[in-house]
Length: 69
Image (cartoon, rainbow, N blue to C red; front, side, top):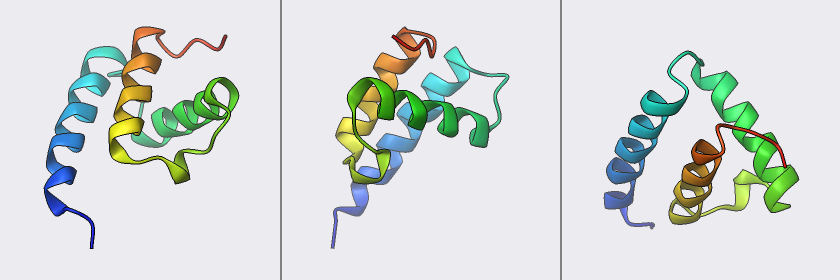
């Protein structure tokens, strides 16, 4: 079983970034846009990412304000 203690820090970090960067987006809009960015920029699917990589990519996505390169 995976370490359950990874969930709360991930959710807190994600919520903070979401609130600071994309407060007007609903969760479905945010995660769909983010998944498309990961697919296009990182050439992978969020399905396969560990939380540590997911939050790293989400931070980068927020820094770029969701822009596609």
